Each structure stands twice: as C-alpha cells, then as structure tokens.
Image (tube, rainbow, N blue to C red; front, side, top):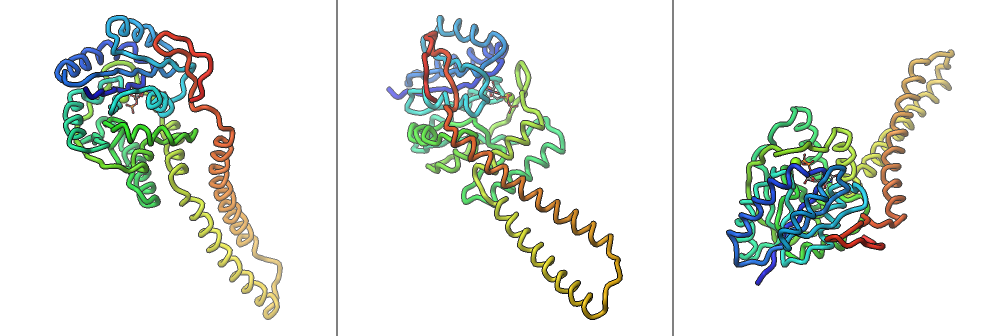
Length: 316
Ligand code: UDP
Ligand code: MG
C-alpha cells in the first residue's frame, strides 16, 4: 500500500486544528486504498497548539508531531517536516483551511499518473491591498527575469511532492530558505491545478509588510546575483560619465580658465555618487550577510520533542 504524508506547519493554530482535523479525516476515509500519515510541525506556538496535537495523537495514531524549540518560521518548520515524513509522497497544507483538503484527492490522481510535483495555483489573490498586489507582482517579475527557472506567482506551498522531490529538497540546506524558489529549482515533472483560496478559519495571519519585504530579499538574494551585476553596470556607466566630465572640466579650465564657481555641480555630484556608492555597498552587504550566516553552519531548526519523546540534540 502506498503511503501519503500530509505536512502541516502550525504556528498558534489551536483554534484551526480542531476544524482542520475532521476535514483531513474525511479525506483519509474517502481514500482507503492508501496508508496515511499526518505530520504536524509545531513551530514554537505560544498557545495550546501542542496540547491539541497531543490530544489528536491519543485518538489517532496516524497523527505525528514534531515540536520545535522555538519559532523558526514556516520555511524552516517545513524543512523539519521534510526530514521527518516517511510517505511515498507528501502534501504540504496550511493549518488555517485556506487550502481546501478536498483538492488533495485530485493531486493524488495526477501523482498516480506520473507527475512528481502537483502544485495548486490560486485563481485569485483574495483580500489584499492594491499596494501589496503591485509589490508582489514586481517581485515575481524581478525573480523571473533574472533566474533561469520560473518562480510562479500565486503558487504557494500547497502541493503534492513525490518522494524524489522531498529528498531533493532535503538536500538543499541553506539557512535563509526560500522554498518557493526551491520547488522550481529542483525541477521534476510538474502539474498545475487551480483552486480558490478561502479566508483563514481562525487565528491571525502572521505576515507584516516588513516580513514580506525581508522574505522578498531572501528570495532574490538566494536565487539570483542580478543585483550585484546591476550595481557593476551602473557603477561602470557612472564612472564613464564622470571621466568624460573630468576631461571636459580639465580642458575648459586650461583653455578658458575657471573662476571659482560650480557649487551646485559639486553638491549634485557628491550626492549622486554617494547615493550610488551606498546602494551598491548595501547590495554587496546583503550578499555578504548571507555568506556570513551560511558559514556559521547552524542547524536550520532544533527539535524539542517528537511524538512525546524529548530529543537530546538533533542536527537539522
Ligand atoms: N506558520 C508557521 N510558522 C510561522 C508562521 C506560520 O509554521 O512562523 C504556518 C501557519 O501555522 C500556517 C501556515 O504557516 O499553517 C501559513 O501561515 P499564515 O496563514 O500565517 O500565512 P498566510 O496564509 O497569510 O500566507
Ligand atoms: Mg493563511
């Protein structure tokens, strides 16, 4: 019998889990030809998520959980899940029922037909401000035009991955993770399904503009070095202009003479060059920061307990 694992990263989901579980139960009952495993990753929730998981596990041995020692963020929580699922394939789904579990049976059908990565694409983006939509669109444009693979817009983590994809993802162990890029990067045979994303059933979404911005920078810096290239090109163009202007100023001073003047030109030049230099330094700094974090080689997450068993040390 083939085994399907469902991976659910949870952060403060005590109210959603009692609603999600019956849905998953219905799904599992409707597909008895498979063995099922529910893998919940408790990402350092501050509420009673862990207690809820423990109660679920008492009732249903298919429920497994990995409890992380603190909040590591969804990307790292998912990696913890990748490391611990045992199924022949894995479905990643949010705990807040924004992803309809009913779509999973269709995903499995495509998987059986030989697709390795069946991902769900949102038909619309739901309630979101105009600014947020524009920013997101711009971000995907930059990413798509600068890397050799497609990072798709409106596609999230809701997808079915074959064991081969899970193993590939497990082997990418960078510390600032951008999993959405990784799905594309690893390749394999992909299939797209459409779905309508609902609103959160309970609790709150944890994304602020600041977090989205830093996530966008993670995405860009971990998949393309285009910003470095741009700063080189801009630097080159600006130096060329500066050189031509220098020649002009020099000969003008020699031939016509130069009374003391030119305060505006000086100020403009200093500010302009200073700005470009700071920007380029900032871009280089972003990449160096990432190199720094990577060289520390810390585990991506720390596990506190698995299914009620305390862990000593586990390198993630
Ligand atoms: N999540 C997590 N760790 C975090 C933040 C979120 O594991 O630090 C989980 C959360 O419990 C949910 C999923 O990631 O299952 C998506 O989170 P959320 O609904 O807040 O994001 P959104 O749907 O707004 O993108
Ligand atoms: Mg959500």
